[in-house]
Length: 163
Image: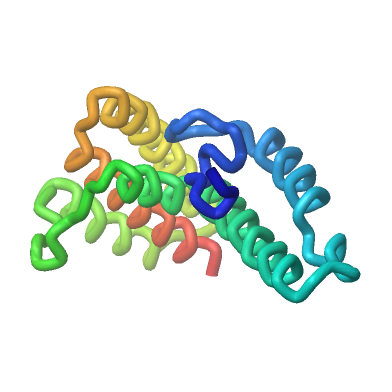
């Protein structure tokens, strides 16, 4: 099997999981780039240079995807052939109400309140990550998708607080 046919998890020799050790990922990234970086093939044939560039791009793409929680979960869903109907809307009304309330709190908050809101959001994300581990092990991909969507909303809230 060629390197380009490997999933990012296979490429990095990391088990498919919601969480991973980012230091391990970084270490493996550096090893892979040392082995396949296009500069190493500067005196090679045009075909070998082209292949090295493609492999290096694959390594870089994998590093970006695996290094980000929501991208990693989207990728896990993808490699499990899960697709979400684009016309289906997010249906967790309780969560959507919470999002509206959070946005209002953020807009009216001072620095101390913002720190409290950030801590609240981080706790929510931590809880969702635990749920997502169960979702993956039970192959509940619909719920995994929804939980990942909620984390994306929470990350937008954190970005809103950072402005």
